[in-house]
Image (cartoon, rainbow, N blue to C red; front, side, top):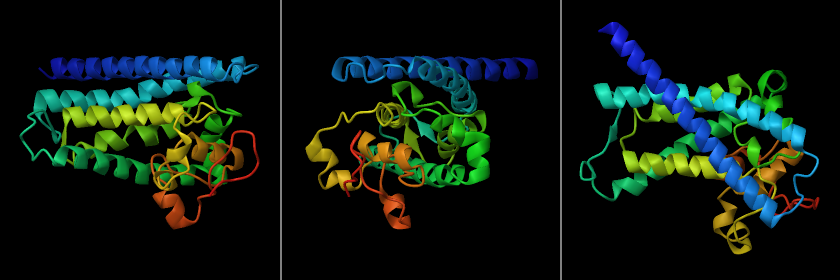
Length: 248
């Protein structure tokens, strides 16, 4: 009985890791192809860097997938989590609220762990892998040292034990996480100027904001929202992809 349970957990972890790896390849591949069409030659001369980004990212995919697979098994087999699939288990208004709660919690975790990764010792040990991409490409979204990947891999699996969420809402959270992780590194801005430089853009992170982080390192640490950067004085405005000025 115990052996069967261990085998089921192991299978779920491996299967989820494979899913995360395929999701990464499809998402980053799609955005890399879009970059080829929209910005021809943008990644010229970065072949070696992109191969390194893919290698680190696939390793990270298995680190992200393992705890997610254990949680998925626990949800289905044991009912351990607060994931639900009955759309009427909670009021319908809670569906979008839960998505925002997850994004806000993930953003908070990411800001503080990311900022910690820029302390000299942790940067040398782990975060330097991510910043070896100069400039990053669409393949760099999960290009992390295993220690850094581990800090990112635990947050969503931990939240499903705390905050109730519909399985579809969780899928949306993971989609946003994937799309923004790739889009913020691809070297050009896919969102319209009116959004990026309008009132919403003052609080949302897009490629223009994260580009500034990869230029200057000690600023713009957030993932989805500029709240923590603004509150803590680490927001340095938007990068302009080649221009040196910052836009507040």
